Image (tube, rainbow, N blue to C red; front, side):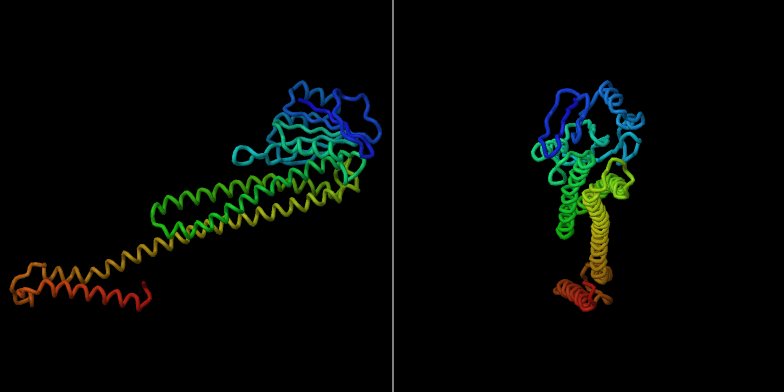
Length: 332
């Protein structure tokens, strides 16, 4: 489906047109939005606007990294846009062609970004950026909206990391299914790291693309528009720093769980060692006496009616003595 929007000069309202105008008037700009275009529609756009064959091939094949290429007659760009899908978000591609008086956007799904930009230009055009429509500034708006969509994702990641930090204490206070909980949490951390890497793979080339614009290496971008692109460049740089910080945090949280697990295991081994140490002399005493009380020369008190109870008392005293010694030495 192709939608044609004509933007008027001097702050005029944007209006939808039914067919391609024979000629775009002075100060006017045509926005062509193609949602899931057919091969015939792509071929028509290619012929009508002189789109490069290799750029159109990238649109057909998809799975392109964010980039910007100058084909002389027009500029071709690929923008990655996060969109909501179920409970999460996925990255979709927005293909953009633009020249001095027209811009083409191509996407495969119904895009909230396109609806948001369309609502903006119909409400107030490109103001306060300019009163005259300009493809480079409309391209800036697409980039600005796309980059801003990364902030909610990173906020969600940071909230998830906060929850994992808080769970570290409760997980190791509770012994029930501790190993299963640790495996689940480490798996979750791995998923968060994978998500951050996906965001980084999209944002890094986006920042490089904006760097090309800032260096003035992209035609059809006026020098007066570079100030607006600088704002998006700063946002992309800030997002990349946040991604790097969150990725380091995931490593810290994972190391925290592994360290706590090791400490918990060491503590368990220590307790078992102390129990074995306490019962060692008791076992020795029980082994000597055999717990069969009868009169004998090498078993003093074994013939006494209270001998058994004296033996139990001796074991208790020895056990308490060991516990006292362990506490005084700081082992427990």
